[in-house]
Image (cartoon, rainbow over all chains, first blue to last red; front, top):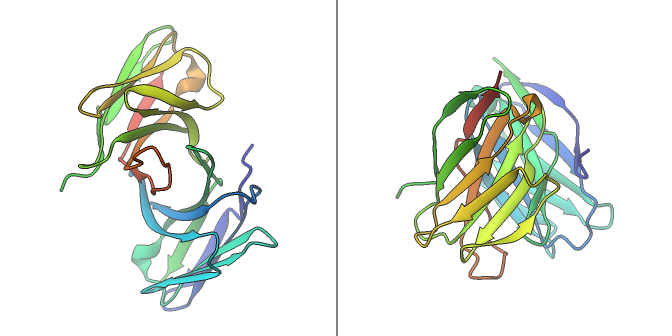
Length: 109
Length: 115
């Protein structure tokens, strides 16, 4: 099973904010990542955060990191129908990346 | 600037056969990793190649093998295919220079179906 845990589904209305949560297990992970996967496609790197930061903002995306609780979140502001996809949280091991099972985000018009 | 490219996009094989999947890394990248993504799950790490050698391996049997060429492209080989090998196989590349700190960029994958 996965070491990284995410809730499986999230549904929001267009224009609302989406918050996707993740817990990871390796406190020595130096980087944590968010990827997006659309149907039939590979993984698109959205953003990543270094473990000595607690927040990173990139346009509509805000990443929050609580290292004490090993909790990572991704907030998408003004969510659009094009944001509908599966979002994966990942932590970096030595060379490998360990992924959660993904959160399926559905955006309703 | 081409991203990570994988071929073929789809492949159908039968049990017991062998398959070779190919990956060209993003321009400027020197490290290639392979992942298996079963339906409804996150990607699972198979192995990583750097400087033409396997640098790290995940929990996959020896039926899974790979190679990296001097131009940094890579192949994934799977022997004695099982039904359970049906999955999306993803290649990811990064520029590590031996330090493993750079984010990995993924291709669109090869969808392998075993009949």
